[in-house]
Length: 128
Image 1 (cartoon, one colour):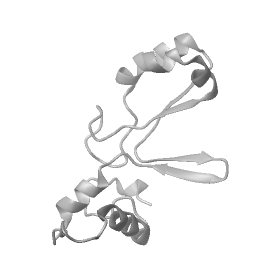
Image 2 (image 1 turned 90 degrees about the vertical axis):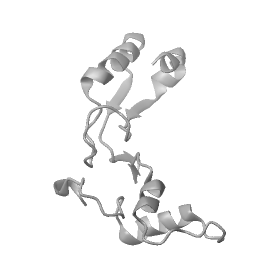
Image 3 (image 1 turned 30 degrees about the vertical axis):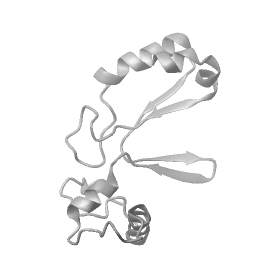
Image 4 (image 1 turned 120 degrees about the vertical axis):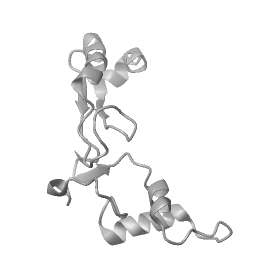
């Protein structure tokens, strides 16, 4: 909060979006994760709004979709590469020239799903 409040120009012209990560409080590992609970986020919001009452702050879910002009941006705070490696049947060959990040991106695109690995912690109502 202190760093944001120190930059008045940034505070006046930005919209701050806070997306909970896997280690943030509130939530039991089920996707989508609920926003950071207000008991944790209220202090930050109050501090920023005290400096600039017109500041735009949003605490949202993980993953979340944000419309930016005509584009839909999807943000998902999760270490997908680590989870993919945990669920892989065959370990990748470290000597090969295969880029694991490229494989992960290709898998996500081909499956059209942010969680291309098996999970029981997915709230099926929001799975699309």
